[in-house]
Amino acid sequence: MARLLAQDRRALSPAGSARPIQPGTLEGVTEPGVDLLTTAHVRDLLGVTGVRPTKSLGQNFVTDPGTVRRIVRTAGIEPGDVVVEVGPGLGSLTLGLLEAGASVVAVEIDPALAAQLPTTVATLAPSCSDRLTVVGADALEIEELPEIGGKAATKLVANLPYNVAVPVLLTMLERFDGLTDVLVMVQAEVADRLAAPPGSKTYGIPSAKAAWYSQASRAGSVGRNVFWPPPSVDSALVRLVRRDRPVVEGGEATRKETFAVVDAAFAQRRKTLRAALSGWAGSPVRAEQVLRAAGIDPTLRGERLTIGEFAAIAAASARVPQA
Image (cartoon, rainbow, N blue to C red; front, top):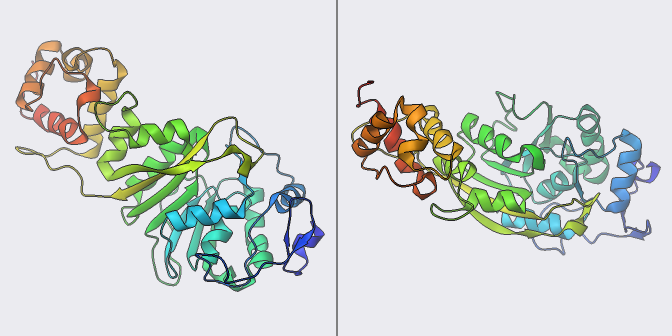
């Protein structure tokens, strides 16, 4: 680790040999003199922090600079952007975001990693240190995000821990409506679910709830060999662009009310909406009445409905008396 902490400004190949970086010669690079992490850096940093990658925290660190730069380009990062990064880990993506000219609010739950990240940036990207703010916190519990240079974050770019990817994503979208553009790396199966349209086999609770906030789409795949340690699952990028919440005719439904309908509809996927929503509505009879008031066929299943139709059901519930 001495070679990382020494201010020698060299990038190391996986074999540990010196390989000078030529700043400004790579697409998307706007900040000269930034070294991105390689396998050698990652191993050094793990030794210094004493961190052993754990499945419980979803710690798989990207070690390929090319992949990092591709993620940053796909996210459309421009100089002056303020970006939230959840789970920066050792700083692989953080350095790429800084290299592209962004300021980064890094939210890290692991105290050792949170403490090390400013040192890593000061060593490998010394001109960028003033554009990094580290928040040592659980992303599921954070209530406020600091501004950088008087600007609030408008983008979320992250390699999300796979075991909590969907809750973290939905929490960030709920609490910080200033986040208008999102690009996250998640397990490929989760990416499919988030981007799935109504009527598809993978459409479900994550798809519908993500659609309340945004338009989601797949944005590429990421191979297992760019991580240390390699994950046991495939990875993919998902882009989410925020949009207005669904507009419902004849009433209004809150996020909480709509999500309660979504949860009930998918709790028993094989059942019709009349049966699946009977507990939520109070009875099968009232479930049918609410569905018809919303203009929804009671014999449909939940996977056929858009988030707007789920919201319409929630709004209709206020117009149908309890039995």
